[in-house]
Amino acid sequence: MAETPAPGTPLSPELKNALKAFKKRLKLARLDDESRLGGRYTSSGGQSGIIGIFPPQQYPASAWEDLVRFGRLRDSGGGTYELVQQEEQH
Image (cartoon, one colour):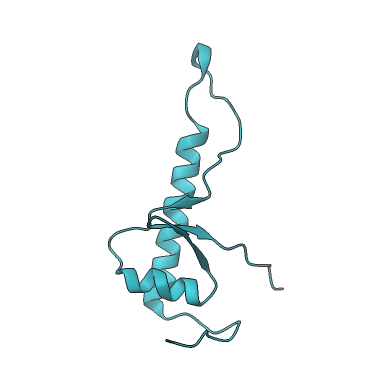
């Protein structure tokens, strides 16, 4: 079993791109959910309840497993992953 990387360990370019693609897909899924039309042709204006998604298929499953090990994603089960909230470091 691979050991867990230390916090703050930099990601490889492939993992950075995979995480960026995941964040973009999650954002689009949330926007799509929030823009659903309600009654009388107006959007509901509510917050999306989407917290986990299936990751983009253009990256191998090992990329998502590595991002879980790095603490950037959480495996939600059933092939879905959640974004782990990182504290802003200034």
